Amino acid sequence: MNGRLLVGADGETRCWWCGTDRLYTGYHDDEWGQPLHGEARVFEKLCLVGAQAGLSWITILRKRARYREVFEGFDPHTVASFDDRQVEILMADSGIVRNRAKITAAIDNARATVKLLESGQSLDALCWSFRPEPRASRLTEHDELPVTCPEATALSKELKRRGFRFVGPVTMYAFMQSSGMIDDHMDGCWVRSHPDRPPESK
Image (cartoon, rainbow, N blue to C red; front, side):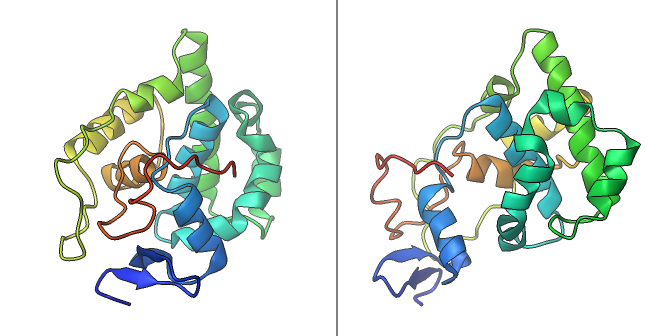
């Protein structure tokens, strides 16, 4: 390990936060910072970063496959139809984070997404309209890592106005990082050296 860069067993230099867990390094290499589009995929990421609040992202990654099963592929129309009975079923499922507020927030967010779609708008387009301008310089291992930005704060306010929950400014900054609106791979990270590498589908 060198400051905030980590050399893995494969010889690749990565941002320190993904450690050596293969699931986490795969996420770092193939998803984090890569542009994410599509209503279901953007809705999924919004829900999962909300579920992460107070937890580590690796916890959510390890549960993501089960989340996709019980939330029906994160189809907003399907999740919007979940009722109290389904909430109780989800609360009993150890494969996801059993937090009632986070579960009901995902359902409320699905309903807010459906309202957007019914009005001829798109969650994908709305979120990406808040994309910050790329930084003039890359983050180095000596830089303080940002936790939010004005655009993330503005996106948070807009989503809350439209009925979304668990979408605070820090959560929205993490959402922007993970969906490619912001590229915070550090200078020296091998992914940063290959910006045009096509992402793998996860």
